Amino acid sequence: MKEKPDSIPTELMEYERFIEELLNDTKHPVHNRAHPLHQESVKALDEMMRRVEEMRNEWLSKG
Image (tube, rainbow, N blue to C red; front, side, top):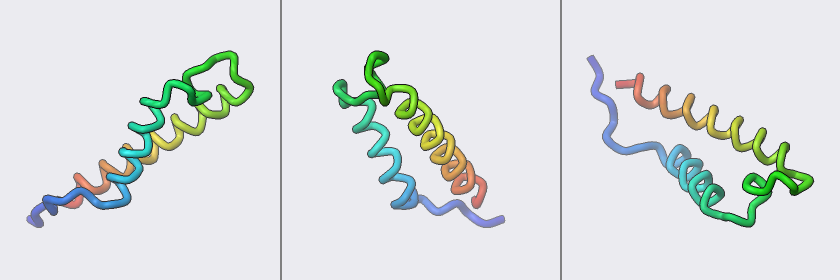
């Protein structure tokens, strides 16, 4: 059986860092239901988080 690499792929780390920064940005439309771009921002965030989860699962299953 192959061993899973210890280091997390750079692309995955960058996506996770971006999501963390976005969630910490209290002025981003994702946090403001009254903002005209709120719904689109939430949808884009959901899609990005789903893709990051897929990437993480792919990486974990390689081991």
